[in-house]
Amino acid sequence: MVTRTRILALPIVLLAAAGAPAPARAPQAPPRVLPPMLERYLAEVVQPTPTERAQMLGGRAVTKLLTADESKEVAVFGAVWIDAPITRYLDAVRDIESFERGGGFVVTKRLSDPPRLEDFAAMHLPAEDVADLRTCRVGDCEVKLSERALRRFQTEINWKGPNVQAAADALMREILLEYVKGYLEGGNERLAVYRDQSRPTFVPQEFRTMVEGTPAANYMPDLRQYLLDYPSATLPNSTSFLYWQETRFGLKPTIRVSHLTIAETSGGAVVASKMLYASHYFWTGLEVRTLVPDPSRGRGFWFVTVNRGRSDGLGGFTGRLIRGRVRSESQKGSLAALEATKKRLEG
Image (tube, rainbow, N blue to C red; front, side):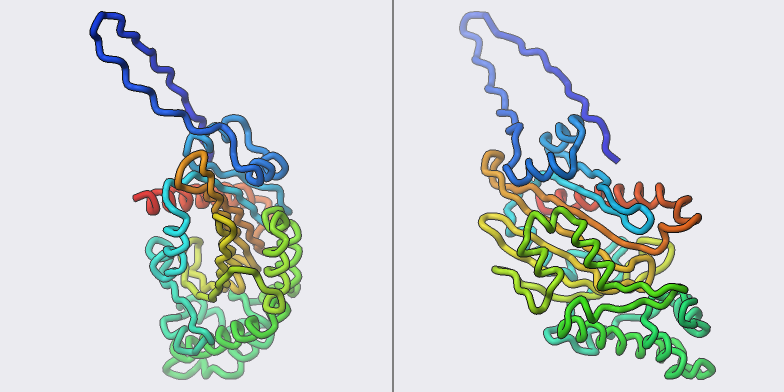
């Protein structure tokens, strides 16, 4: 949550006595302007309050909820100045297994190129998910899966056998491997159609409408086309990889698969993390992190993030009851992530 910045006015004492040492020169105040594209984005999209803008220019992390369809999407803007070289962040995020480790990240594993079944060896379904999959039916399931995947759990697992957990883990690993291979071959159109609820959720369609409503991507047309048309579209000066995680940020442990792309620009960089699959909560998600140099402030960079996620838990009567809390917690989480990134890189 954004807090107000208090400005303390310190009196300046002039030493008039003969021979008194000259006072030390006060440190130069940071510039009160921002790089042009960032300035434009703030003015047109984020529209920070004067207090939020002063806080940001003062070097503190700022977050703000962005306009989105509250019945299914949460969107959060964040920014902070980081006094470190851009390459330090890029090197860290390339080592994703170390970068996203600890806290709510139980396991993070970068996938091979091409992906292999062994990449998912550490993936274990939570016991409650296995129990749910025993009785899952199309249109009534706690785990987000396609109709084909749900039927495989119904027909390929001996639910009365002695090794149900191991069998369920093995099948889920196969499903995830097929899923990421399909995405690498056919892009978004090979993403799942979830059948865990009464109405199917078309992930490709949800992702497209989310990206089309993301100004951060629209400010960078090459990135927008890449996100929508991968693998037929390419992004200049970029590298990418897939990784999976087990996370514990909500009420249930969640298996996630993401596609991370790093694109270096003239002096700066863009990092886009695209959620391809989540076993709970999310249909899809996208985080765009823009690293903007600002020579007027020194060697560091502006770390600007836009995080959007679509979920089925925000609609209907229950969704209206919890919507405010979800939005607030998302904003707090973004603020904590910004502060942790700043501390880590500057330290």
